[in-house]
Length: 102
Image 1 (cartoon, rainbow, N blue to C red):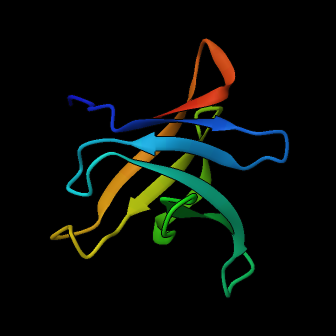
Image 2 (image 1 turned 90 degrees about the horizontal axis):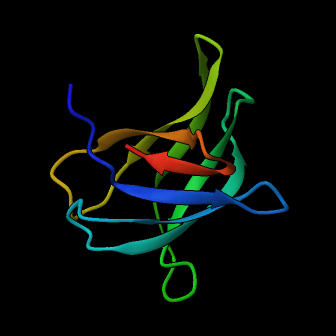
Image 3 (image 1 turned 135 degrees about the vertical axis):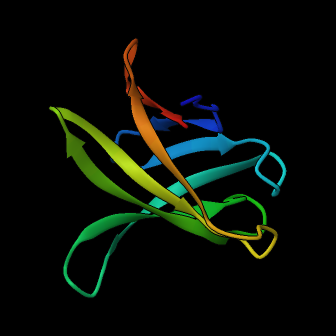
């Protein structure tokens, strides 16, 4: 299965992620995350696009773990997309505060 790199994110000193998403029908846009809690009490990140312009929600990221690897399962949604895009933020093996969106 081929993985396409959709973007990159970096964790700041407060634990939030900041990054850029490229080429998924919404152009190239900056995003940041905001801590949120689901109705069932589960913690997740809201993904906010264009944080310094006209911010809008573009999805959510939930922490997951598989085979000892921690990552974020991401769902990207936009009225510009025909359907949600399911992706993941995996840690960059060369930088512990950096993630690749694939």
